[in-house]
Image 1 (cartoon, rainbow, N blue to C red):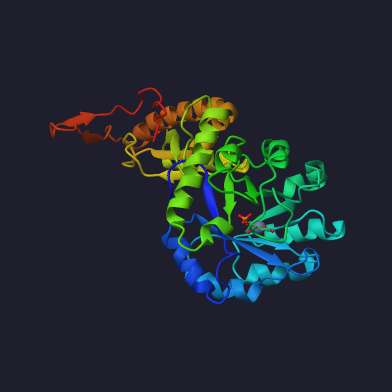
Image 2: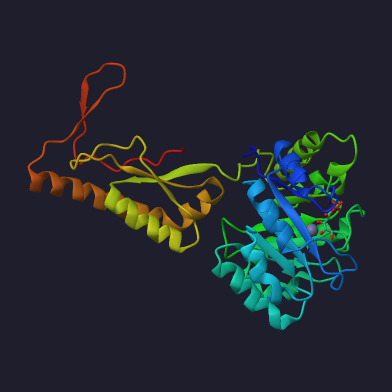
Length: 353
Ligand code: DX5
Ligand code: ZN
């Protein structure tokens, strides 16, 4: 996984359609973060590409995520086939028959995949309003859908990219804004400065003689530059996969607190870290949250954390008394000597991972 924040989805639309397995192998070895697969039905857009069978065929060729971008008129009819093909996310257009939208988004989510809606350049974002609670992805088109190699619509990007995040506000960590169409080294910094998470890059990667890996790295780095200097007060962006320790607690309390935090949509990883020893012989567990959600977690749960830490202190005393155990010892680094950790010392400080 690359450092930084921005991620590049390699669109295979302009790859050699006689050898998609090779395109996937090449994209992966050149540093793609994921693949973007443009499905067109000759009806929603005036072009035809590939279907679920092709996706199923390439699925075993890579472990990278496969994002399907359905430019088709009847997503509800075909969604099961795309799910079955192994897509990690499915995004279709909000301009289709409105009756189809909610059931299709629900089907995608029920299958545990990310669900997205795409908007054409001429469609206002406000049409997403009725579906916002079902969205993991908002895909902003910065060209008319249908073909690779068109020029980037700067005004559309400026109007929509930052605003699109608003429709993902219920999804504080997992939500992604994708930009699709005309993204390359010339436009990456601009869209990065508008906070986009996933940059779909197509035709420029498949130009004969082009160094694909370098192009991918440039696009990612420039998008991060844009983000750092336009949106993040000059601070380097936090990598999407960075985690920080939010609390250290005895196991039974850690598990309870984790469930509470996760209920609000913030994922938590419990880690057997270097927490203090407890009288039951187990160390405290670290609860890790995504660095990008650290502030939100603090806002929501700092007071709960105090309560849990107090409960942990009471539990240690009670446990030690009930079982007649002495406080456990742990070796002091470098000395080999035992350091006694009393069971009732004050709360552990949250540390950065
Ligand atoms: C266009 C597709 C895009 C296309 C982008 O309808 O949705 O994903 O591959 O290609 P470029 O990067 O050439 O604009
Ligand atoms: Zn696309």
